Image 1 (cartoon, rainbow, N blue to C red):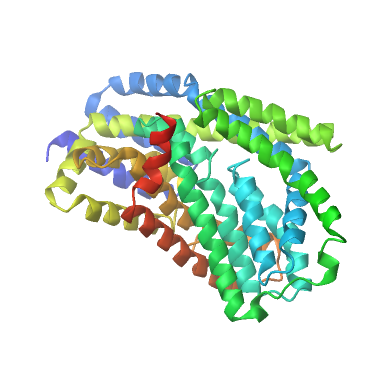
Image 2 (tube, rainbow, N blue to C red):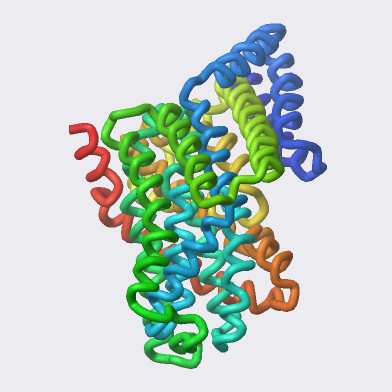
Length: 439
C-alpha cells in the first residue's frame, strides 16, 4: 500500500472516531479532509474545498430541496394531514385492522408530499393514538404501523434522500424518482397486507371501529374524501407527474408544488402568518444543514479519492471475486448495521461515494443499486439501538413503553426485508418505470 493510500484509510478511520466526539458531522468531515489531504496532496486540498462547495451551492438540481421541504412544512402546519387521516379512517372503519390501514395509507400519501420523516411520525402519533386507544387496538402493532408508515418518506418521491443521492451517483433524479415509485408502493402494500392478515387471524389486535369513528352517511363520507383526500392527491400527482413525464425539472416542479401547497392552505382557510413564517424558517434551517453536509462530504470524498483510497477499496472488494448479487447483499448488510448507530445522512454522503467505484467495476446498475440502498437505509429508522422512529413515538406518546414500541417496529423490519428481497430478485420492479418514462 502506498503512503497516500495509507493516509486515505487512516482518514476513514479518523472520521469514524471523530463522529463519536459529538462534533457536528459537516465540520468533522471538513477538518479530517483538510488534515489528511494536506499531508498527502499539500495546498491543493484548499482548492478542492473551494471547488466542492462552489459546485454544490450552484447545482440547480439541489435547488429542489428547499421547495420540497417548504411544501411539506406548509401542508403539515395547515393540518391537512389530519383531514386526510380522518377521511381514510372513516372509509376503512368496517374492516378489522382499519386503523392500521388508515395510518399506513395516510403516511404513504403524505410521504409523496414531503420526505420529512420526523414530522410524519409526530403527526401520525397525535392523530392516531386517541383512536387506537379508544378502539382497543394493540399498542405494538400501532407503534409498528406508525413507525413503518412514517419512514416511507425516505423512499417515496419526492424523497430528499433521492435528491441528494442523484448527483453523488451520477444518476438523474428523475430516474431515481421513477425507480422508487413501484418499490415504495410495494412496501406500503406489504405493510397493509401484514396488518390485515394479522387482524384476520387475531381480530382482537384491531377490531372494526365503533360507530363514533364512522361516517354518518355515505354522502357525508364521500364529501369528507372529496375534501380530505382528493386535493392532496391532485397536488402530489401534478407535482410528481410533471417530473416523470419530463414536463418540468425536479426544481421547477418542486417550486410549483410549494406554490400549490400554499394555495391549498389558503383555500382551506388555514393560512396563518406565524405558521408560514415558521415553515419558511424551518425550510431555510434544514436546507442549510443538508447543503453544507453535502458539500463537506463531497470534499472529503474527493480527498479520499485523490489519495487513492477509492481505487484501493474497489480493488480489494473486486478481488474478493464474489458474484455481483452476493457483493450487493454484503454491502446491504453493512449498510443495515451502520444504520444501527448512524443516521442516513453520513451513510449516504460518506459510504455511498466510496462504494461507487466498486459498483461500476462489477457492472451493477447504479439506478437499481440506489433504490436497494435507499430501502435498506429505511430500516435504520426502525433498528435499535438508534431507531429514531422509536424516540419520535416515545416523545409524542410517553405512556407507550419502549419495549412495546421496539417489538412493534421489529415486526415491520421483517416486512421490509421481504420487500428488499423481492426487489433484488426482480430488478425490473425498479427499472421498468424509468424505461417507460425515458421512452
